[in-house]
Amino acid sequence: MQRFSFAAFTLVAMLAAPPLTAQAADIGLKPGLWENKVLKMVIDGKDMADQMAEIMAKRDQMMAALPPDQRARVEAMFKSNGMPQVSDGRFRICISPAMAKRDTPVIDKDAHCQPAKLTHNGNQSSFEMNCTSNGVTAVGKGTRTVAGDVITTEVDMTTSNANANGKTQVIHSEMEMHFIGPDCGDVKPPDAPAQ
Image 1: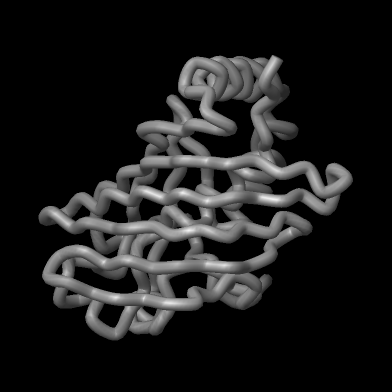
Image 2 (image 1 turned 180 degrees about the vertical axis):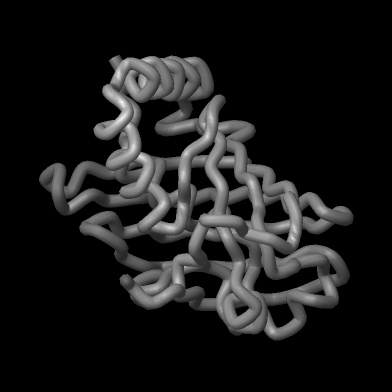
């Protein structure tokens, strides 16, 4: 049975953030609150959409069953990582003005995952990567397309997880981001100083 790799999903989610380039304002990236959703996740040739939906539904049930103080702590943990969870496997991220001006396609506050190559053509950006984050190495390429307040990202990569004896996986993911608005509310951008 194929097992869903949470570490791989976390890396894909990080890569799904919009392209943070000097030309970002010209292709639709705006500072503010964005909501992300996984459209497709294929790992080692197997579509993991059903398994992901099941994992997210179980997570939502577990969160709902937690006592209010524990639920608040878990939600605070997600928020402190700059990605508070919402239902249906979606998550939100706040893009600061400084993040929107950076010349890197990945939101990566610790600079562990920087692109080897980045090109722009109209409303589309393409990138190549070879990076390591939290013990997961990813080599691959991706594209992002902007249409108004929606950014669609496709990534093809091979990951190797040092925390799982170097287990490798071939991943194809498709994600979509929707701009919610300029006010992030209580969601802090990943580049905000720790409090």
